Image 1 (tube, helix red, strand yellow):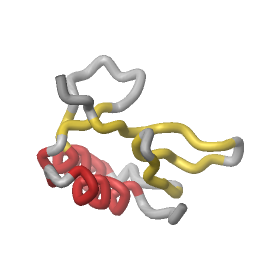
Image 2 (tube, helix red, strand yellow; image 1 turned 180 degrees about the horizontal axis):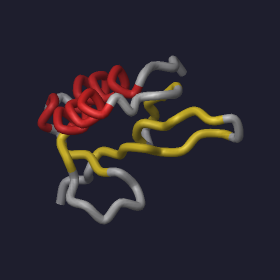
Image 3 (cartoon, one colour; image 1 turned 90 degrees about the vertical axis):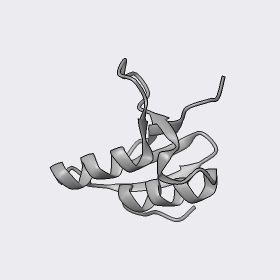
Length: 79
């Protein structure tokens, strides 16, 4: 897997889902409503909270850590 920044991972996820920046995603363990990929990118840019390396898998975007990785964004499943 290729490691990338969180913004790069979100942009790539937008391409993979073919719905673009309007694709709804959610943060695991967060009770808030889903956000779009575009909103997530804007939030990261506004708060400059992007640190670490990220990968995309079938489970979502994962942050690479010393003891493994954890999912930070998942595509919201359609009902």
